[in-house]
Length: 575
Image 1 (cartoon, rainbow, N blue to C red):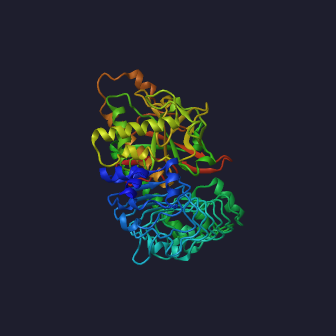
Image 2 (cartoon, rainbow, N blue to C red):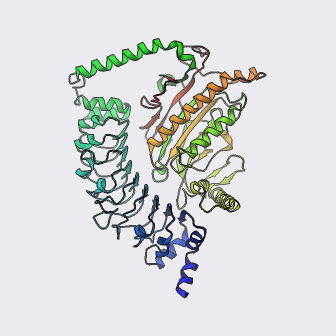
Image 3 (cartoon, one colour):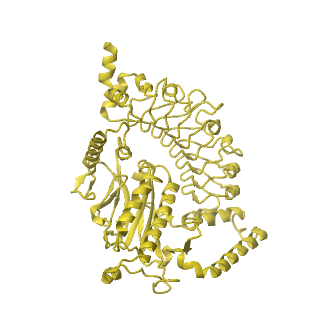
């Protein structure tokens, strides 16, 4: 009895979670350090009796060296396990799996050196993590990956290995059909010396980041990855100087075409005539179809993409190295020509943003959207991270406050809301507010005046708040896990804005202010003055925004040629 009372007193969170039958649990903070140290560097066994848990996070604890036995057996319904910024290592003893329902596993920022059988992620036969989709092993000391990783987690979609000591990938990772769903592979800041031609067997690969390694050659077979859209090879020691120059100035499509053609000096000579003829036929067919369908164009959504080279004053975001370990992915875009003044257009726009946060953004845990009145944004912008006590912002609807105090205040409000609603589980609101717990730096977006206009994933600034008179917007999507997620969500947001704008223009209420409409005139275009096109439908203009590093090297541009690739009959993209 005395021992049980001592455990309850030392771990009140566990008693509360058990009593309220919670499905989510977060353990972090200074007090956790002392209690884990007293428990021998492990989590308390009582934690593994909370069999209803779907989400478990234990972060920022330098005393936690191993999870402890009983996790797999006691938490069979666990879907997300976050054990980041602890001291796990050199292996995992005992191994984590089997966890049959686990979809997200975050072991970033630990001291893992190897994950051999019995001290790794779980068994390979049968698969220990059969439903795992996202695996984050960044910021460890891994020198090699387990050869049976693909068999242990056959449904893996996102694999983050950034910031380890890897010099190669296991051959088993690239076997035909080994990881058929893998769409994002990040292995920047390692010691990789070669890339196997078998990487072409990753049929779903969309994003590959191998920056800052020791690669001297890139296999031509990389161009055979059918869905590859984003490729980052900066910071390597490539022998092909032309290819190295292309990395800083060319899009992924051009780089892949260069590799496909065989490299230096052979781009034209090695091209496949049949493929070239096929491309020409497709282009001609698109032109013919475009001419035949002009009559139906009035019923379509029109989006015009303005390239950086056509824009006299493009907006640029510089991403500092501080965000790499906090929230490294950002995509931006400028949209001009929105009518938010007529009727309830503004309400519909804000409602659609909330719905995207609930669905695609997974209640802001996967990504966060921020929208700004472009007239209040002074570029160039800086995406960086600062200590919580030094970061100040004027959040939406509030007075200036330190970021640390704002997060704490919002957490208290969310907890009070949970109690009033008598909810058993932590709400989505409560969950995203804890994404920054234990972080030494908070991400922020600064304008040219040094003012914080965005504090993801928490809030925007009152300075750039969207109003009914807003017609030109700056959009940003940030994520801690995936660049592709940012792009997918930005695609969905821009499409939704086009739908709202078309509906508004077609259903203008009588008595709308023509002078107010005039202030929201269409933007400058290089070839002709803006006007209603094809049957009265006015296109939204989407201006490219470049994100660069401190040295000016391009990290991402949106929308690129592969973005806004919307296969919908009611949408026309004018590039």
